[in-house]
Length: 148
Image (tube, rainbow, N blue to C red; front, side, top):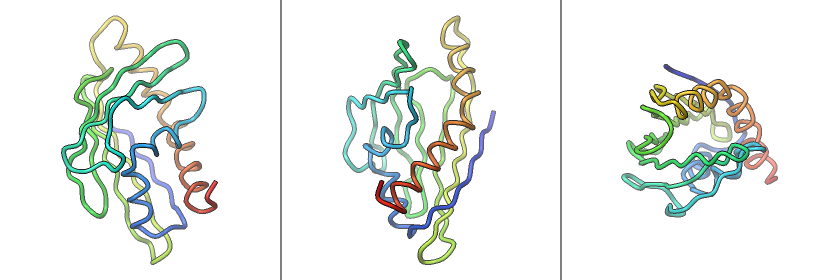
């Protein structure tokens, strides 16, 4: 299955890309009530780096490990190597509109895991993607446009 989202930020491409490559940004743009706890990740994510984290969905811990791939000036891919989905590939792509504005494109290719617990959890998480990414877009704009 494929999910796509796009939003615009009044910030230069380089600044937007740098923000998204920082491991701390994930927690900064994740909406409550989801809590993100990063266990292991470099501060700045590069080719081949892995990020281990737990998403707390209420009382349910969802452990995840993602590998960063295809890093370039206009984006990167994070691929789940362990977690709730059978397949999860999230491509982050950045496109300069002009010197001070960037479009952010997110594309997620995913498949649910066939498991009595993780199958329904994965489907519920996937159903929440539109709301999650609307929040992420708003929060990214707030951080990069106003410093908030």
